[in-house]
Image (cartoon, rainbow, N blue to C red):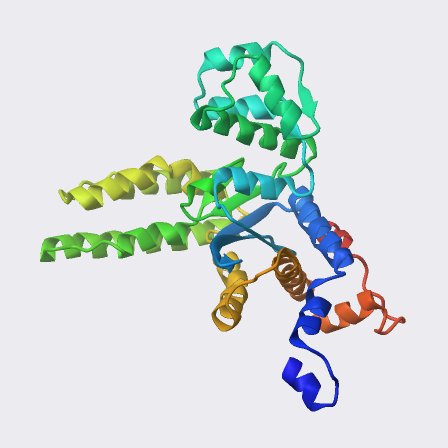
Length: 357
């Protein structure tokens, strides 16, 4: 871009161009954050995925969170469950110990003896991490033991998410990455088949078993799609039975049988569509949205400054959101910068996302 501007007679340095593209974008950052908030409040489902990113010569991770009408990207040094929950919490910084938080801790099988002193208290909300940790320490929690404190930190953020009305009835659809397994979770059925595809059978018999199971799973996937078009209690029961018939098969191949056992244990998440037919059976939407990010990464590498990282995430998310709303991003930019057609203003994207949902 610097070369293009210089060629047309504009004297400008690369550093100045970078400043124009990455600074004074507070309005765009705020709208991007509000889009994510509106989506998490109103969407019936979101699909999530992540990919590697380079920032300041370090390995970071970019997480995609998107629904039918919105998209958001967030880049951070970690892709842990704690980080994912912090992304869902958005711009809030508080921690809440409420019913949702304690249900989260019980689901993580935290020692009941550690929970008992906290449960005797009324639900508590803490402005930030410092008073939250102080409260835990006062009730016998070793806040310097990472293994002990991690689920409490996750629970405190999850309690805040639910306190602010986020991810209420929203189903989180993901691949088999453990950090996304929060709230009402559904697994991508396509990724389940990909696990079989990655196996390396050594004998003709093992090859036959893998091919047969892949065919059965793809047939089952088509039946799930038919169920989405015409759901019924009878069809749901039939699909439950068929799932058991496929994943309870014993082949004699240890590696294949272990994989079937692993998938069998995830039955509720793989069959979430039976209770929520409106959710997708895959995370293809997230993979499509991330493709633009990956292409940019291959061409221009990573980011250096915090402003550059935030600008890339916000503008890419707003671009995808505009496309999903059928809007021209060029028109949107002009409208927000005050150089577009004033006769056709574009309403705030968060209100459009919420209204559509």
